[in-house]
Length: 590
Ligand SMILES: Cc1cc2nc3c(=O)[nH]c(=O)nc-3n(C[C@H](O)[C@H](O)[C@H](O)COP(=O)(O)OP(=O)(O)OC[C@H]3O[C@@H](n4cnc5c(N)ncnc54)[C@H](O)[C@@H]3O)c2cc1C
Image (cartoon, rainbow, N blue to C red; front, side, top):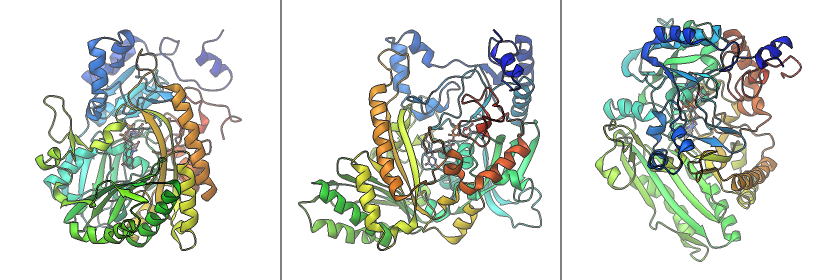
């Protein structure tokens, strides 16, 4: 029997080399790469190997505790934030990794992968829900160590001299995490940079996804604030991409999805004016019956449309399947009393029906603080449990994260879907239909409206900047991204006592599907956020990028015609087998 690589070659298809099979680089060749990148070349072993061998050991118990620390996960070359998705993927270590320290290391790794026909994968913060930053049998380029951050007072992109006015900006290495960027830009320098809500997401991965943060309704898409990137393309060239130099690549890297066009090594983002205050409103309301819950959904939708659809407000309104409404909103540019005044009419309405609605935190729980200290790990916030810190000894003090995001660390997904909801649904005469659909969805599974992930209600400038990205245009007219998902705490196939709960996972995935069917009755064929979406979405090109897909594919063909960069449901991935190892014949590729 022919080895897979040769069999594929015989059929005219291209197959990438696999470890232990003919075509895999010899030790001497790996040593050569080692000479080029020095200590940066590592043979990868997953810490989970300990548990696979000895599930009852103290080391394994300790490891499962550490899997709840997002910084621990981010610092491990062989791990990812999500450990897998039942029936979709399981986090697997690469064979080798280049833990790149600089652009030259990345160039060496890209050239080595191309010349030796290897499956290449790129990882930054490791937060891909779709598992696109890990691949068994691959060479990994890990950018985590490239994490310098420099605030610049007067930045002009290369080639833009004379065309663009200097602006305040921050230049960051591709491996930086948002928590550290917020510390440098906001806490230290008093500016604002548009990044992600979750502080341990990687900068380069988020920007290539498009990127939605807490205060998105004021500042727009994170990718919309990108000024420039340095990129290593498939041919090993180091390119600058901005509005004036390689503008097509620049456009594709803004929302075109990570890991498909090249390796971003450095990026520069606009620094905006910081408002005086940031704040949060948290509240849980229990409806005492299903009809009361349906009424409550109608009330919050009406209230949102009248009072919150503007640049001050962001984050989530969560509709739980047990008739519970959770408000987890943030605001910017308002004082505590102004925010309270906004919410008072809603609280007054609830108070008229005490038998129907029980507010858990009464009176309304509102905090407002100086915007400059929003991401700072102050004692006040630590004591009140508003912020969590990396508890490993000797770690940097700005290794912080929101307590709510700890749930995601090391989790295993059961299902995940998202849908952009157009703002037309908030019109008079439409809101009732919207509330009915949300209620029907909650009879199947909980759903949340991420109102900071749709541009309706954002300033015109933010909408225009988002329009000039590869992000699905559906986001421009949406008031929210609806998300429906389920996961379980850290688990891994083959580790006794820690196996994923496959049966519950499949049951939950079916319930999510039914909930989303209700949403699809409301919005047939909705757009979906590439970074927060269904692994099994067969219509991913249209869902993730809408009318931008053909332009994105043209950028891919120009900068990576042979498909060195492959990720699941990434641009051009339809030309490859699901594992990215085999190029499909013309008849198989769409
Ligand atoms: C817990 C959690 C919270 C999240 N919160 C938000 C949020 O608030 N807002 C939001 O918009 N999204 C959010 N996301 C989605 C997240 O933004 C994307 O998954 C993003 O791509 C993650 O980037 P990363 O570097 O952390 O992940 P990785 O898994 O390392 O990378 C993600 C993808 O980008 C590629 N990539 C990474 N670095 C590079 C590089 N330097 N060059 C080229 N390709 C690269 C990888 O190959 C992979 O395909 C969240 C995800 C998780 C798991």
